[in-house]
Length: 314
Image (cartoon, rainbow, N blue to C red; front, top):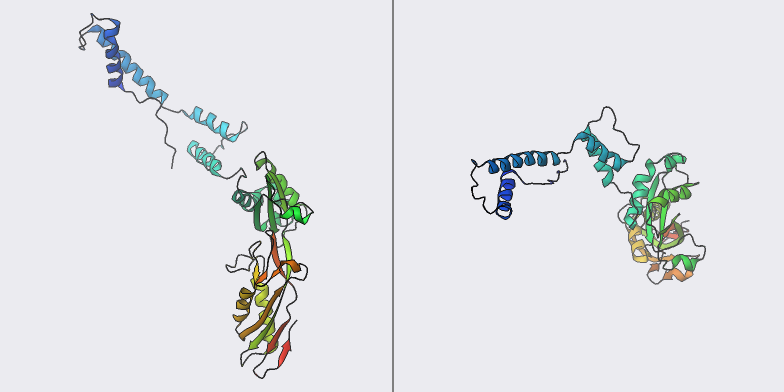
């Protein structure tokens, strides 16, 4: 849809003649004949006609002016491709103006990292094209800090972008290259950081009562795979979009995952622990920090068949 051109002056012939005749009494009180037969009125009408033609030209934008405007928007070195029409150049320029460039909000940082960054030469020079599987932006956080207390504290003017490379995309130099890409796009007072995600090891233990036709080892393997899939950082979570950053692991939710295994009849004694962070363990599960994902550790599951015999999983 073309941009409607502004009307710089909408006065027409009738408006101009009426305005001119309204000024005549102030200029000459003896001038009382305003009929077209009067030579003075004839001159007024002639100049009104000439003025209307000039106003019509003012409201037109010639191709040369359009080219100049496009050069101002695209940069002094811009030239239109030989095979591109002027309307096509205008359309492309307007579409570029609508693209996100400035990183202001958390959504801006995430969009630029996922959509604009892979198109750059710096990204293409990295292994796997520097493609990202997931990004998550945390405003007012300095995740480059080595002190855990500082990392978790409120940090005005700081923004941390957590990135996960896609499969086959190495992260050697990725963080610095992406930081450099975002540097000219940030607002003046923003201090941005590009880091990888943190992981918290979570162990799950449970007693599984099996169905009549279930093989214990098959059930134990299926249960562990169900847990691995649910806590997967890329495909896990309730929506299959990856375990959410900073989302706590709840005992009831873990129990529901195990109960959905087809070979399991019911589940008992479910426990969720974090060996490396005992202070994170609560009565209903384990608490994660805002930049953390789950790394499933040991899963000492015990399967009981219909005869009450126990089979220990790994």
